[in-house]
Length: 636
Image (cartoon, rainbow, N blue to C red):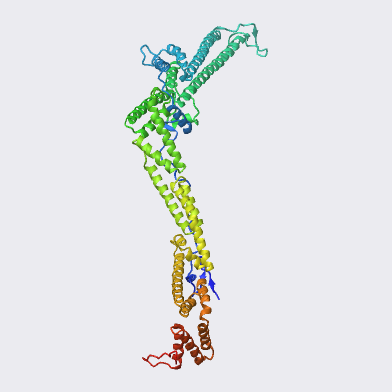
């Protein structure tokens, strides 16, 4: 009867005596008896999902501001600024005749209104030149807006002058009224109209009566005082209107100045500031802005003072100078092929002075070099975010060749780290695949794909999966044949199975046992066949019968024994009888010995008969120490 048991790896075989004897499973380790720590394990922090934060420095003018003269000038939304910068790089320079004439007109206006002009500033001559500058499309009609602001300021100033003249006239009227009232109060006397006396006082002299319509008691004097009060109220009202009109006009004018400064139209700010000083010569140049506004904070938080027209003028001049310096630095770095730093300087110049001459007249050839570098740099940043390190390596190599100062250390580090991580994950997936650990292989290959989706080794792994699909199938066949005990089929497919199970110690050990035992069986069958050819069927049968005890389930061995059985029936019957008598209780040694001797007489070279006779002879006649027992011959 066959007895089988299961292995931990589902390799099923026979007990001892089969072609394959499976190894004994190790006993499980005993449970620990000592107290264990029940504290929860520390929570692991999850790594960032993406490989990069901001690994590569981009063309970005700091935090949407540029500091000029200690004041952080806002530049607006960086995304819009970058879009405008890319548009600027693809535009031809503003170097035509109309542009040259426009910039010459701006220079003439600033010179005409400058305090250093011979004979002093000429407000009206400078004002007449504004319409010509406003006709240039690149001016965006800002000179026209400046002319409108100046015109409104002059009208408001005329209105203020009219109120001042009205105040002077009513002041003269008040003085005349006061003078007339003072004279009447000093010189007019009440006339006597009769005598009056107290009737009870007979000795008192009669006093003259007074007329209430003259002097300080007259109605005319009361009306004079009322008119003086009315004139004073009207005068104060006109003064308040004058101050309010002046403040309103200045505030409206200053709004335009601040707007142009924020828009980085520094030349228009300079013109407006110089016109301002000629329109209002009262020395009041403080900007009327809310203390909580961004413009007020721009100055108060940077330099700690309130903004003035003079500060806008100074900062505009400083911004124009800084823009020229940025462009000079750009030209120098570009000539040295330091394209990365040159691109940053150009973007800073553009962000600060987009509408100034040094930026607007930059040659297109220089801007094209920056545009190509800027495009490759943005694409490099995109490939890093997309984890396309194949394209990243190509772009990095191109940028290194284009720009001598390209900061490649972070890019190279990112490429090296993540490509290595992806390659290692693929190698681990291959190991799991060969070990028939599909779930673990899927996890590793998923991790490798997330790190580097375009890794060329992923295609190699796909090819390996396709090629190892047959290996996996062969392994499954090996396990099935092993569980069924079909060792002959395993031997038939040995050259197919051997490569598939390579690297698996348990399967390799099972395969070696099967092949060793089947080789032993085949050797015995070969010898038996040789005996049968020379007519030694008894020797052939005995050759196989000994092996049958070790491998009772081998079908080929059993079939050969069945074919020999009719030819050696008398011999096998004598051996069976001998064994039956030997195994009885009590043992019948004599009968058993006689049958062994009969079997030996049939086949004198029988090892089985000789061994049985010797075994029983030793029981009848125990051999003395050191003596050799004499075996009975077939004739005894």
